Image (cartoon, rainbow, N blue to C red):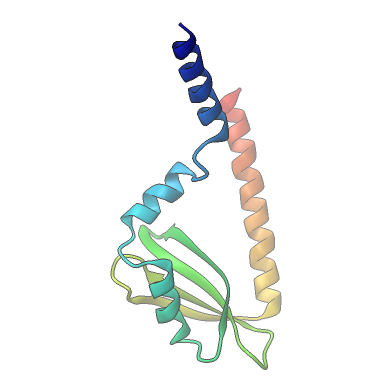
Length: 124
């Protein structure tokens, strides 16, 4: 009986702590054929001398992509490079000013707030 209680307790703790990986994120990483390191190397070819400031794996317009914000010396602008996570092909390259970047961050924050509100409504 004690073993059963210990196993149940450990299972409960495991569920509370989680795996440290959001299911959707883990699913996308498993689906990606191109590693983050390889995708960064590909992206940096489109922004010579740059450094990756941020990067994430995301699904955009039905495509699984690695998206990187790359800063370059001598400019405050950011080069956003998107790499197809299955083929390694460049999906897009866009220059964003510091103002564009700030607007994007603000709109992402609003989107996350709305997602949280929607989740709370669903849980009621």
